[in-house]
Length: 350
Ligand code: SAH
Ligand code: SF4
Image (cartoon, rainbow, N blue to C red):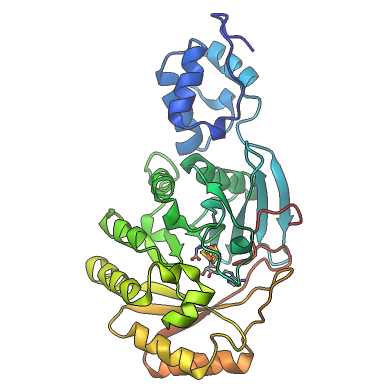
């Protein structure tokens, strides 16, 4: 397609262009530099997905943009809805990578669960995302894109955002924090930082960086096992960030922010659901302001593990409660459509 100055505009999906790339594309087509900022603002801050509604752009430029970028949002590769109301979108990015994002409605909330990477390099043994290996980091735009598609599909804006989809968020900190800044921008979705939660398998640099950032973003740590030997196997990142250092980082987070950290525990039958495992966890929690969230293991095709029995889970909770530790059990949502924790894989077979 050609602009009025006769130069070719490269037709590429807009969401895949960062601001600087967009500037280049538009400059090549002879548009003023500030157009890129205006468009970026409409899409990523105001959630406007149609050039017709971008009223501060001239009609001629809007027509040109429409021709060059027939769609602002990419087509949804798959959209699935569970009988419990949970929705999952599978998006195909410009390089054909598949990513997944989930919308979880509740009585008076709507939680969006977002991915930060294509696959995950951590490779936890009980996680379907980890099983599929790592392809690449997502850009901030690609993280936000998931929010936009979910808003468009469900017609509801999120009340909460959790970075608990595919990938280790703290291995992609630049894009993660940029996306959070845009989500909380008063000119955009204006989300409160305390409505956002980052879940990490234990990347200490990420915890430290979060402490130094303004705002009240919540921290969840996927602990699962509270002794180094067991955790080295189940959550291999433990070899790099062993429990002693992880505990120290969590303690610093609690002291410096005054906020409580959630420790996530997926209880697996005969693996980490025993009395001793609960005692190790009680030891780990000592001196920390934490809350333990027990997550039921979600099965997926080919998974080697089984969830802890109801009896073992009950006993595990009893030990924690007796030690004065707050403990809850997370409801599992979206299991039918493989949208629950640990079931996202970005695979063709859902
Ligand atoms: N990578 C980050 C965030 C994504 S995983 C992290 O690990 O924290 C989100 C949560 O799902 C983590 O607590 C993770 O341990 C948990 N999870 C992974 N596989 C699971 C499974 N099969 N069933 C239940 N929870 C699972
Ligand atoms: Fe990665 Fe989290 Fe899955 Fe572990 S649980 S493999 S860190 S996505």
